[in-house]
Length: 70
Image 1 (cartoon, rainbow, N blue to C red):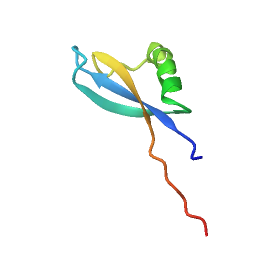
Image 2: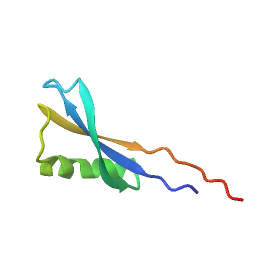
Image 3: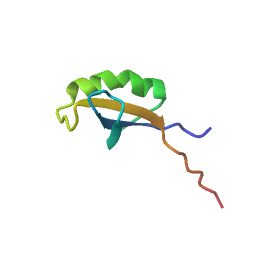
């Protein structure tokens, strides 16, 4: 079974929260989207850089790469 890697991306959003831009991918990887979402509140609470009126995160599975063996 291929391991699942999930990354959290920091988003800067407009006041209404409807126009968001990805600012950076955080270095921590999670084993599931649920685990990433569970960590989101803590990440946003500790966030010291506020580059936009509203900060949010997006958790998504990273694409996996299959390596062929010889």
